[in-house]
Length: 230
Ligand code: CA
Image (tube, rainbow, N blue to C red; front, side, top):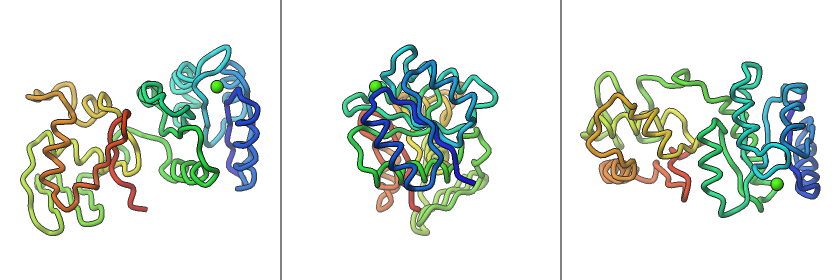
């Protein structure tokens, strides 16, 4: 059965291009051209994935995302925010209200399809469900129970904060997190951290990861993600 995608986009040209390319890949596409109608369409169609423009008439994309994530029937439906270049603060906002990923305009059809497939493969973000105590990614091994991190077989010493940060990111390869999300989810509000600046911890972590430092990628203006090795 074809996977269903709802595209919420008010610019007819872009909606057409998105629809065309997704249909060509075998997806069943339903379009909506404003936010309120988009939300209704989501509730009616119950799609496998949503492509959501942010600047929309009647209800903006952030509000649509917030509403969808508050709806038990839609909360696990992955949302990819579609944003214009240079609107990183909107992307951060979108990720903050539960969007799973984003793509910036202009994008190539190839990029679009790759992103859609990646998000469908990863599935919705469910807290802790995909977090295992021992994570192996390429040449990196993280073992929480043994409080051990191995870089190409060699043990490296991490602080508790670095360990939590690395473990969290590595559990969700390819998924971008904002700094706020990392602070609250990876490090936790209850933990006393001497420096609540994520960048400082990432810098220290990369140094210790040495040859694997590129496993943690900076997403300019947005946050960080663990390299998707697929
Ligand atoms: Ca728009």
